[in-house]
Image 1 (cartoon, rainbow, N blue to C red):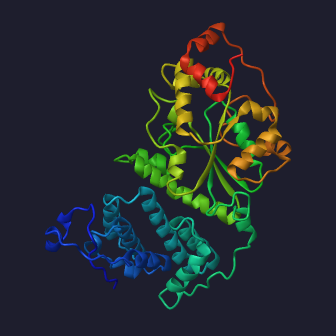
Image 2 (cartoon, rainbow, N blue to C red):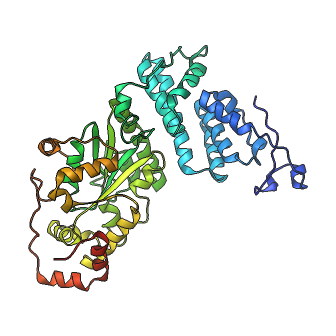
Image 3 (cartoon, helix red, strand yellow):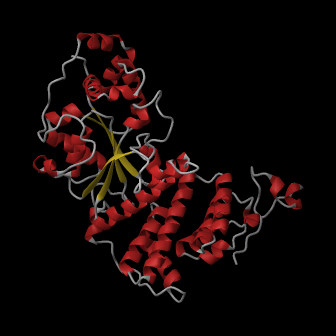
Length: 438
């Protein structure tokens, strides 16, 4: 059993401590408690983590993390009620939600690893265990931690013996995942493309999908207001919205992250870069006001490192396209001025992301795609112009064709240009994106 003496109380409430603490007496601190608990998590020593008693570390400076580590122990022992209690306690004590999500997702993958060993699938077990450590201990080398965890969990216990990987550092798949690439990130990031409707996003995304070892998922928004109907047998997030009672926003986010964890692991197994093309229209161009909710970048960033960029098109041309499709009616009032205000909100929400202009891309596809690949940490395929036409993605709602070239502006009444000149929001948007009206 892990021994833990009561540490010094800082800003924590003394009302939870014993009589000595309430009288102002300083309590001795077990300075090594957190380090021991973290090592036990890395080794997979779940029994020792599970006997950590919150009463013994209620005044520890790192009590929130200790409660979460104790929860991880109970999670692996199948003690759901105690896991939930300790997770709630960790949250109440200030533990970051992202850290909580990482720890719980890591636990799911550790359980999958154990189950896969029982099924006799050693290769699959190693993949699950590596994912568990990658998610739960980002920034560390999971292969080093795997040696210790595998020996502790699968050597002499109830589970079949599992041989640790000897030296997987130079396997081709791992190089393809970014460890030895120009991206140089471990764990590999989730790449994100942000753009609004009618900005040429599908064309650019198809060309990104034509780059080497790249897997693009198109039109991603776990909190989108667009739900096609109530028959959603394959859509857990959509089904949760129509449940009784409906799932709240955080539950929908947790469902999305759980599914993303499977796709992330699959991309890593296949040696591919996972790219999510966000469907931003539902947040910024739908309803009476811009939706006050997390962006896809914020949601994914809770668990994974990200690399993102924003693509834009001349706002006047985009507005004409929205009018042509009828989507300008998705926001109110459906004016050029209101549209410009919402684009400003979109750009504010994605501040700091590299910005790619559609006009630059169609004028010089090769040079602009090299900038995109550099920004996302992808390899570059110089033959993408010949190969992208074979790629199909959802969201191809604009003018069709497989030729990359500038197109003339849609016909429009002169009054719309007058409206553009009179709109301060539109004029500042042109300046912000370095466009001119003519």
